[in-house]
Image (cartoon, rainbow, N blue to C red; front, side, top):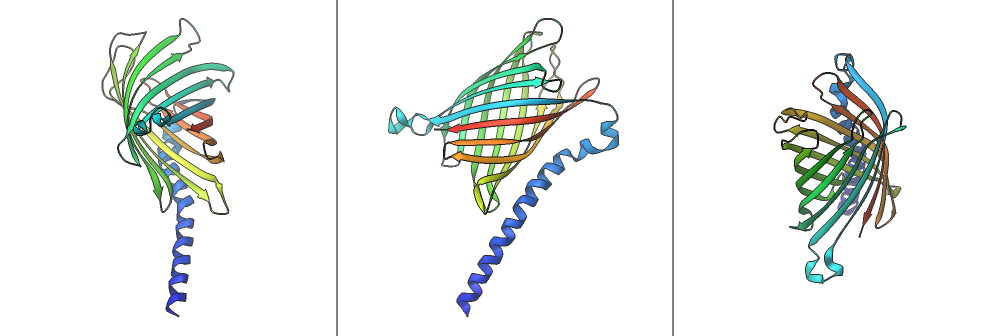
Length: 252
């Protein structure tokens, strides 16, 4: 009788956990978008539909020497369009190297180059150095990732250095009946650390919130597709971008 009670309690705890996880994904995304759903926020916004692609490859240097397995590499390319996908908006290339402190936490440094395609005039190029700390691992509610990133940015339309802080939280909940498919939700906030003569203003810069589906095609191949809301704080008219986000992750 005691064994039956333990089995029943275990099943009930697992069931409640499965019920809470998708609810938490929805709450996390809804909370991030709630300020932007208010009529006052929508009253003076420029909005657009965009398509963002992302291919990220990452792995370690264990193929060179087993002693180097804790050293990591990262390569990322992101083409981004605007105006319902008709015009190129940005192209971002971001390599980096990292070191695994533990099985769950890593530190990274890297470089990024961004081309901003403008409608009139010369394109604006941006160079960045970035540093980040990531924690990623399994929790009772699914896979959880916290990413804290600092950036130092230079643009060709100015000569000052801009600092920016970014914090992202991500939850991926595998569907019990088909664990290769996951519900995915994440939110990332961006904060400018100083003013620059190329347009950065100290304080809140933007927020990105994502909700979608992940599919693990094979152990090293993950696809995530969904909707991303991007709210950008501007000096004149704030922007609200509705983004179809297409992501391919390759883990080596």
